[in-house]
Length: 495
Length: 95
Image (cartoon, rainbow over all chains, first blue to last red):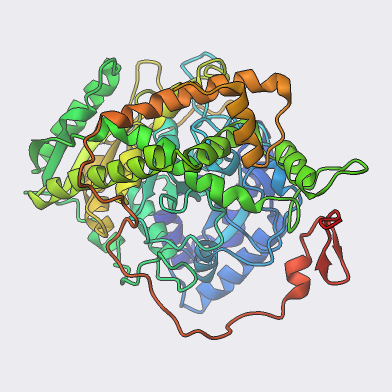
């Protein structure tokens, strides 16, 4: 059997359990594809030896009859996750050469379930970006192209490598992280499924921090069922993360009945933005019809503070980043700048951080420093936190009125060309997250489901937003949408 | 409000990031664009609203105040750019 790399997690699990395939063969097929896909820039540190070792162990465990669903499944891991003994750089020069002495809780959970790590995946530096163009490793490239045009497109960001790798079948699924849309936007740009769970579902321990009150881990997969299976393996309470929720993790896959009769789906008026491309608008109406046909009740709702989510995010996230990234000082790990005679410790900090951080990271750290500085703390930071309370209250009101889930577009456009936004001002790039960022501010679960193609043949996604801690219900709504949309397109292989 | 090159230089200093003088005007311009965008927040009526401190209304867990970890000097130092005799080494701090 060949092309095992194209399997979903669910199919591979069933075949592994039935003894039809081995994890070693599955892993070898993926490694071969990764080898041939260098031009996609998705994998940045390959770990073939570790992968084969883990695959052999998984095959042994499979024989013992005690193998969880993720046992033997080959995955790509975003470079933001600390992986013991394996380079972990957050796609930054400042963490050059860093090999963690410990394993992040989420990857440890996946490994405990028997998963196989193929290598580390490209991303925007410190997860700051929406196009994977701020990475020290260079761009990740979207496997999808506009018809016969060979212009390279972005896979989105910050989990661009994860989305590109899953979309190109280099791995069965990948981990991502999402601070403002970094799982859902790349998933939408690549025809894959991406879920950000409720804040606190996945432990943040051992994941390089960007904005701690917003960061959440989640999977990027080939189907909603796979998202359910993999998310369950990633979740769980962790005493090492004080914000990790001590709640039981349900069997998400068992909740995928596809039955959404009577569920109330909210359509927020404010998301209908001026200048929204008609294709996005059309996709959104089609998605609404699909859920309605599946028996859901459609209700118009209002989230009045929607408009202020991005500005609030661009105060809170940089503020937290400036604080979190203070640790990169050239003392304990990573890069230290070469010093001249007479340079003291301040010069060491300043030169190290100037050399180690890319332009986008420097800009955000400095914006964060500014909004937290004396005299501006109340005007910017405290005001943004109050607006955040209002954004969260908007959602609470809607859910209290009986809405089960909210349907919105995932992104304001399809994937754009690499380099196309280079000359745009920074705010233009921020707009990529306009539909996703509210979810992070309110701590809610959100999922992006591929729902259609635009007229150039590029994938488009819709986002479903759920009630806190009800990922199972949300996944079931997403499953119903997936079934109705019947999205099966794959990118033509040019790499 | 407009950010001057002086303010940009001050912020860079506070953030401990060296920025060359000739790069300051462009940086100040970027700050102005971003802060101009952020300034929309001034329109929102926040009277009587509490700032959000936690996304979930959960109490942080407490644990017993006891040693659970330690004795890992070698591991702690293993990634240091300059470690000597069991310490992190840095340029001279005190004259």
